[in-house]
Length: 452
Ligand code: ATP
Image 1 (cartoon, helix red, strand yellow):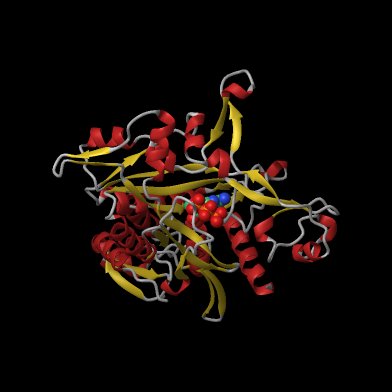
Image 2: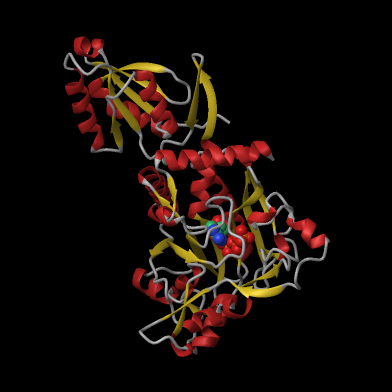
C-alpha cells in the first residue's frame, strides 16, 4: 500500500511541477475532484482525443462526428432512464458524518480528518452506518432567470443521449445507411458520492463515445468486432498489453437494457479498474426515445424492404481516465550514469513535446543553428528549445516531460552540419544530417514500439 501511495503521490507531484494537471481553484484551497490541465497536460489530452478521432472518425467511412449540447430537453433524461435509475446507494457514518457509496466500502478510508487512517469497513462492522438510500448522480440547474421546477435542466451525465436523439439528422445529412456509427467527444458531469484517486473519478470529466447502429441479429457480431478494435487502440496509444484486460459483466452487473457488456480494465496502482465500457444496448434507447418523443425512430432498409428499430453497440471511454492511464503507464525511474532520472515513456503520438532542441553551448554560432532547426521543426510538430544549464540536465527535463527525442547542436555540427539525436527510452544517440532531421524523426515516431 505504501508503495502504491508513493507512486500516485509522485505522479501527482510531477503533474503539478511540470504543468500536466493542477488542482482546480487552488488559490482558494481547491475544489474537491475538479482539476485543470496545464500546458503539457492540455497537449497530452488533445493528442489523445485526436488519436481517438482519427481511429474512430477520420479513417472510417462508416462513422460520422457530432458535437451535441451539454444541456438537453429534460424529457431526454426521463426517456433514458437517468431520472429514475441513475443512482448510487449512499450511506452516512452516524459518528463522523462521512459519506460513502454503499457498494464501495471495501478499501475505502474514513474521509473525516479526525479519523485519518480508519477503514470504512470497520465502521460498517460496528453498525455506525445509516441504511443505504439512493442518490441521483445528475447535476441539476435551471434554465432562465427564475429558479422553479418547471425550468429545471440537467448537466448531461453522458454524451450518448445527444447521439441517439440526432441519429436520423446525422443519417440524412451524411447519407449513411445502417450499419453506421456516430462519434462524439465532450464533457459529462456526475455528482459522484466518492470521487477520488486523482483524476480517475471526478465530477466533471470528458468522454469519448461512439454509438454504432446495426440491424437486430447482427449486434453480437458487431459487439465482438468493436471489442477487438477498442483494445487494439490502447496498444497503439503505447499502453502496455499486460496491464489491460477485459472484464465481462455478469448477470448482476449488467444494465437492464444491455444484452452484453465488457469493460476494458487497466491495472491501476489502486487495482484493476474500468477504462472503457463496450455495451450491446439492444433497441432500448431508440424505443424509449420514440415512446417519450412520440416520433417514429424506426429505420427502413430500402434494399431489403425491412423496417426495424436499430440496435446500438456502444464504446464509451473516459478521456481523463485515459490521460491518467498513459501517465501512470509511462512513469518510470531509472539510473543513468550513476544519476537517478524520472522518465515518462509516452508514445510519440501522444507526447506533448516531440523533440527538444539544444545548443551544446551558448556561443560559437550554436544557438543560431539550433534556433533554425527549432523554427523549421515547429511547423511540423511541437518542439521545445532549451539552452539553459548543463546538457544532462536539459535531457532530464525533457525525459520527465515525456519528450521522445533530443536534438543537440555541437562543435561537429558547425563542421559537417550533422546533429545528435538522442532517444529517450534507449538512450541511443545517432548523428543525423540536419537536412534529414525531419524525415528521420518522423520515421522514428511512426515505428515507435513501447518496450514492455
Ligand atoms: P464507474 O463504474 O467507474 O462509475 P461507469 O460504468 O459508470 O463507471 P460509464 O457510464 O460506462 O462508466 O462511462 C464510460 C466511461 O466514462 C468510463 O469507462 C470512464 O472511463 C468514464 N467515466 C465515468 N465516470 C467517470 C468519472 N466520474 N470520472 C472520470 N471518468 C469517468
